Structure formats: C-alpha cells, structure tokens
Image (cartoon, rainbow, N blue to C red; front, side):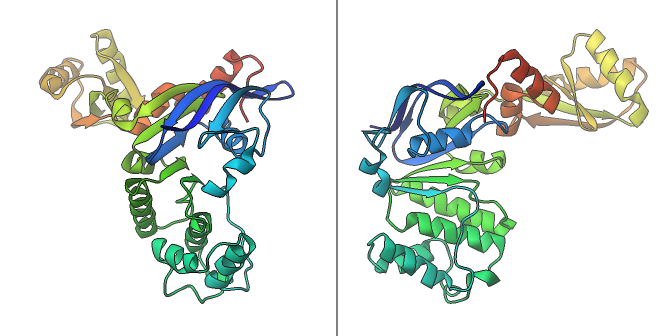
Length: 316
C-alpha cells in the first residue's frame, strides 16, 4: 500500500511554479530520501502534504486520506521541519511532558522517545545547555511522541558531530525496519545513500526520479581518476586525452576519465605519448552524489541555465 500518492500536484506562487505536475507513489515502511538542489520545491512538497499549503492543481493522499482534510491523518504523522523550538529554561523531559499533555498522549511515551534518541541521562538538564545536535535529537523525540506511522524529518542530522550522525542513522534504520515510514529531506547525500531504501529526486518542482535506492545506484559508472605530476599540465593532459577519444571531465584537482580499470595501462600510455607523467591513477566508482549532480547540475551556472530553460518555473 502506498503511504503517499500525488497526481499532477502543482503549486504556484504568482509567476513561480514551485511544484510542477508532480505524480508519484511512495511505499509504506522503510526510509525514503527526498533530495533536490536548493529551490527545487522539497519544502513546498512537505508543507503541501501536511495541509499547510493548498495545491493550485492536482491531488494527493497521505495514509489513504486526501490532503484536503489533513485532520484525518495529522495524528498519525510526526514532523520535524527546520530547527525545533523548545522552552530553553525547561528540561528535555519537561518539554516533552508538556507536549504530551497538550496532545493528550500518555506520559509513558516521554521515556520511550528519550531512550530512542539517546537522551536518557541528559533529560533533566535545561535545554539551553544543549548543543545544536542534542536539540535536533530532542526535536526527533518530539516528532515520535505520538508513535506515528509516518515520520517526516527535514535535515535531521543538521549540526550533529560524526558520532551523532551515526546514532541518528541507526535510529532511522531501526524505525524503518520496525515498519514505520520515515521521509528524510537532506543535503547530506552520503547519509541519504547510507540509510535510505527509496529515493525521490526533484528539480525545479519536477520529478526526475522515484524508486528504490538500489535502482538509482545501478546508474553508477566506473571511472579512473588521474592527475599529472605537474599541476600546470592539467589542461594540456585533458586536451590530449580528449583528442585521443577519451571522455574526460575536470573535477577539482584531477581529471575523471570514464573507463574501466582494465584500460588504465592504455590511459597511462596516452599520457606518456603526450609527454606527461602521472602522479595519480586510481579506479573510482560513482556514488549517489555524483549521480545526483549529473541529474541536477554540478555548479550554480548549470542550475541557473536549468532555471532559465524552465521559463517562469523556478521552484521555491
């Protein structure tokens, strides 16, 4: 059963089209990544699904109910959007207990969610002493209070140190394994790749991919990273290899050549024929970030060109 469906979902803000005929179906259970360049409509999509913004056109359902009546599913959805807000002078436990009382939830849930997010033992400290990462974990705890079927998290690892990121990654995996559906919107593509079962990519309000993460990763390609001994030879090396028929892309301080490792000796000989000695030659594989950049644009100039091509359709 699909936990979320959209059909032709469109949202315009004056001349700006933030969502452009979005049609997708998201499976229940597991962790779903929602990614796209800045300004692609991710936040607009989340707010529309939550009933905070009305669509201009199209329809959508959440947990089987239409978004025209969010009261039907609101209690079954937990949400953390942007930075969580708490009463700084109160403890983590007191903040969560207040939220539980307001929402008429059993106070036993407070202990359960504190344990889930790893704040047991720090729960009686005032929130004003918490680091940004601890506040983020407390925000996830608040979103889990109602024991929701669907959990929507916007940048859940924001501000966390490496150990905290690993903890949240394991928490999200556990939630997905236990039958809950977790939607994660994040710019940290390495984390999305590590934790998500399903992926949605949008660009300027348009859907460009929706499917299992494994299907997306099938698009990865082998390539060989090389660099000349002398940095000043970089352009000459790129020109020589291109003229010789190699597919070459400049990435930071190296050249990326689309080829399998079996051709590394040929590549080395081609560099030598151009009178250039290599200081680096290594096999590499695309990751999610590389595929994402290929699909959406690598630099601001490419993104700007894409926006100009989508006349009047710059996502918000």
